[in-house]
Amino acid sequence: MRPSFITLLLTSFLIFTSKIQSQERYIERDGVLIFEASEKLFEEVKATNESVTAIFDPQTNKIAALALIKGFHFKNSLMEEHFNENYIESEQYPKATFKGELLDDATVLSDNTATEMEVKGTLKLHGKEKEIQTVLNVQKIGDIISMTGDFKVTPQDFDIKIPKIVENKIAKEVHVKIDFKLAKK
Image (tube, rainbow, N blue to C red; front, top):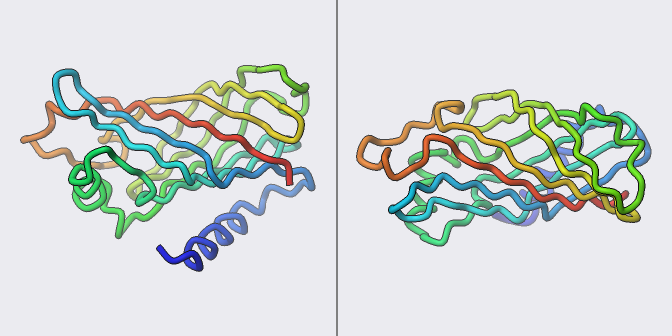
């Protein structure tokens, strides 16, 4: 993709999340999102996206994230092609978004102390939305807030059709991991 398109998309995303009103925001532009849907005895079904954008406001506890679908990369290029063309249909659905909030008060974060915090929000993928609630490991180190965690979804949650010929090679549940290092802006 052209840099100007990415810049426009990220700017639109940040304007879209402008309900986050406070002066103190934390932003990540190189967040990591990994999903795995591997089944034992079959080829690994795992992809990584290392260019996820996230924004967090500790005053309101609001968090939002954006991942471009074509940013997910597999070890097997043919698998990546099938993922984009046949399963996720990335031309029609080019991004995944999450909008939510921490259910615990983030203003109490103290330096270098890791805290488990619940997060609840809506994941939008493939034109469908799903409520997600999970626990994140949150740690503030100077002007950086680290957020790591995981959750599970299913292809059916997002109306993603898995052909019969490969349905036993793909896990029924997809394990998703996040790793954000949000910097104070």
